[in-house]
Image 1: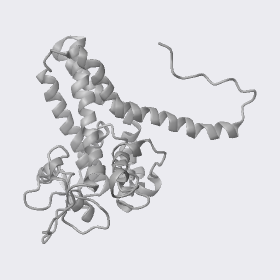
Image 2: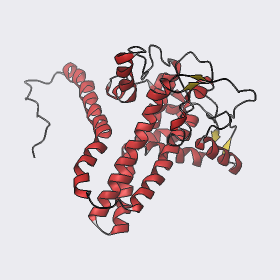
Image 3: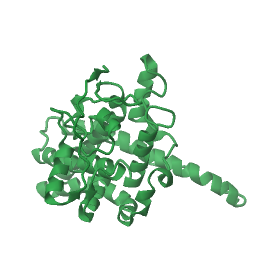
Length: 319
């Protein structure tokens, strides 16, 4: 098959100004292609592979591997990228900091610095002008809200509106460990897929076994975590309950409690962003906070910002 990339026509002379103008556009186009591959790739892979696998059982090892990698990379996002690096909910030892940054990077949701910059900007302008992914950008009812939900879920990923790291995440830029991990992001993203491929081949001894592991424990696992993370952007600003007064439309959506590892208690989080526990009320499941507590007891996490006394409140149903 031929390449879809068309070679440009030769230029009579190289104009540095023209080349400078073209470079950002080319970079943005490449970023869009990568984003499209990450968003649509798993679905395309499933469409191609399911007929081939029809009638064959999914290997238990693929499911177990996928669950393990989902939890590891998921905690890398919820505990590492979110509660630690974005909001400084606790102070980690250096080994824990590096481990969380690596695991979060392997979720393939962007480098730690870009993730932190985007999320801090979201908090600064939540559901107002400047929010990179509010579902209420077009309106609060009918087709306008549906359009906003689609935008806040995946559409915003294709918009050329990067959050400035110098403005929103200068502390990330000063951290040498995190900057090294930032530079390794493409390698870590590839490793996130190659690890299940390699383990699948080692367990089965066949190329087919390696491919099924890559599909279920690699691509499908990654896609599920992506959509759960994006659901916090979209669904947790539209449906659910509001227990705390905030200036935005953030909600607590209990249906996502397990799969989001506790990041679904989004209204409480927006009211108290530095708290290490988002599910601060009785009966709220928060696996990420549970693990942070274990880190604290082991001495790996210090100065943990736990919820303060007197946080009980009445919930308001949002849908």
